Image (cartoon, rainbow, N blue to C red):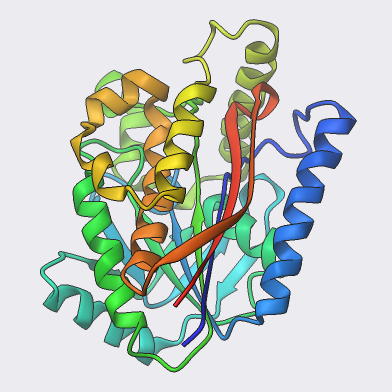
Length: 314
């Protein structure tokens, strides 16, 4: 079988708080080049690892990992809304296989996803519905969080399953790198927000969703002016992380605790586990080489913004 991987930072702030035009052009060029490589690969199936931001997963039930056997994008921050084309029988077979590998993977037949899933499908494939997709949620904000070791094992189990398919598979990781936008924490919120985080936020009224988005936009605007208002970006760690992935040293991440990662690069940096899962999936399918590495800290997007592709060599 053939397999290709691409990991890309996502940001809801595109078009709302943007960097200088030359930076935008640079990022657009990187994404266009990755999209062209993916188009040349012509995938028959996409496996997409992505987080959520209290839009689809809440504290009524918060799994560390969940495979969408059916999934719908809500269309937040001007991303596409609509149904993701999940192949039901294949998703069910994948879930059974991963569970048999000893990984406790939840499933959802009505998974709700946000920009973390929609943005890479739009930017890299041209839309939500272009290629059948297996959407895999990795909890990156709601404690208690899965660690790097368990995430790596999830990816390896996914890779073993995908190796049994006679398909061209595109593996996507969406999230990170260093960043800490104003995401609520259950222990620190008022009664109304607590109720939203316990599940009522799944059907958020339009005016409240607009207010929520406005808070993120305003936080980004303040961060551009004063980068002490949020956890600072950490280009050194971001680049070290990308190098570990390039060199196949995934197991070294196991030693980094969740608390340590938050302190190093921000509480939303746990989204990098989508990258770790993607590369672990690829590693279970053979040796690999990387290409198209890109990194830039972009305060306007509250993100250490990265992009990295890889393909098997055997």
